Amino acid sequence: MNTRWLEKASATLGISGFGFFIFSVAAMALGPVVMLRKVPMQTVEQISQNVIPDFYDLLVRYPDEFKKYFGDPGDPPDEAKMRQYFAEALRLGRKVYIAEGCWHCHSQFVRPLADEQLRFGPTSWAAEHQNELQLPPLFGTRRVGPDLIREAGVRSNDWHAAHFYNPQAVVPDSVMPRFTWFFEERKTPYENGVKIVPNKRGLAIITYVQWLGSWVRSPAEGAPLTASGAEDSGQRTLSMNR
Image (cartoon, rainbow, N blue to C red; front, side):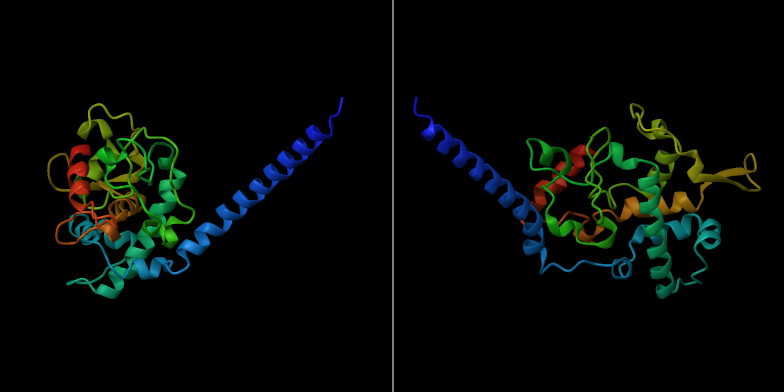
């Protein structure tokens, strides 16, 4: 029986398979570099030039803790100092987010799958992650909680503080654990003389979450800006998801 044709076919398939493997590795390694080479990668110092309103709000709501852990920006707040404190809070907030395993249950990437846009808005695009705080990207693998890539400004600082302290107090069916170590007691002359306020880690994680996606939102409208013109859809779906 002549088996040379079978040997040739096997050799051809083997060489082709190996070739496609090499090609796929090269494409995955070089593709992002080629596509994103003209998109600047922002540093934290560049990001912090645009201090989000929620960071100023933390200064107003928790002045003693803000000055204790980040510094006194003066009255009115010195913009240069606020940018410095904002950068520090963002770096710490990301570390806390990773250390506490928030990425286990929350993704930061709206996937191009069915119903994703209905839940979280337009599909994420590469330029959304072109900054130092997205290295490595925290895409996540599970959806126990909502996607957070565009969480900025969706909720108030008070809501986040209450949610971190006792998630079920604001979302009764939430399975998120309590993060009481983000808070401390402050003595007051009112009520029972004690008030629960965020400590440094609490202020930082609230800042980080409130910053996520702030770079793709219109400051005036709070709506996500997209490359595909799906702005209206994004606003509507975000509202449905909250």
